[in-house]
Image (cartoon, rainbow over all chains, first blue to last red; front, side, top):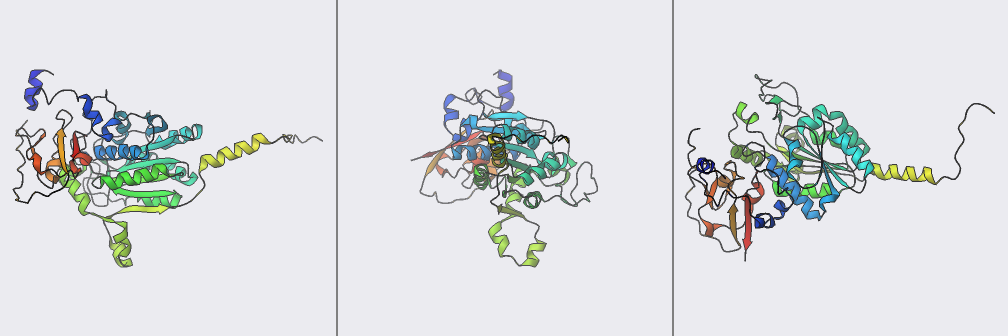
Length: 309
Length: 84
């Protein structure tokens, strides 16, 4: 590296070297990164997306899946940059259509573990229709929705998950629209596994992610993250570390939420984290393949009724 | 760009616990200096470099290998190895 760059960053030559070989071998998280990809990532300094990415890699690693068995599908947005840095099959698609492409991929290759990585705007505003219908079909896709309550990449417009009263660049006097409860939506639409966690609870998140990937049907994991660059700046919520700490303070586990009285549950404004739904429902590709098998095994092909005798 | 002040570490005289020790390695070129690891480290192993651009290990012997910095680094720039 050039000397003046090192000087500007106050780095010694040893610190600035490309990661040595044993850097990747040191940690199982790093082993599934693209070694030849340019790091650091494009995300802002301290963004929770990096934490979620680490949790996703650890979850896949925990299940012992081969790199070729996993396909990551992403749309557009900050979150959709995530597969770029990981060493799996990846598909970068149009805005909001990650689940639509993932459905096609899952039907073509039912043996593959398909993970659709979406932001909150990507999943619920532009791709909201695909989201509810994927949950209705119960197709075996893991949807990882990273919720940062704002459209981060485009400059901080309010999104379907911005809480009421919070500011955004397109809502300078506060947002008046009630937000979408992502997990409730998926539960009502019929997803077979729904869980929620935050970027602060990274180890909990990778536990839920590995359960979701192992699950047969449609599974949703909502990872509550933060955007300190636009949302945090406009609402004066502090630095990345402050917002990370706020996630710890404003969330309660589901076990303690269940112990509250109904009135307290109504008044609860904290993020409830935990496994919210586990359902046994037939998986879409299995039913579809069964139908194809039944029809192809038929000896007689029914003649079409042409109306003539 | 203005010079970022180094984040002061809280001086707390806690007895160093017995148990697993870890070795922290930081890859400074991947780091963007968000200070999450420094603010959350329970035993104040890490502190910001005077330049404010990346953390450095200041108290290696205090590390208990809790893996907080490791799992919460958004840039995956920290690796903690558990020592026997």
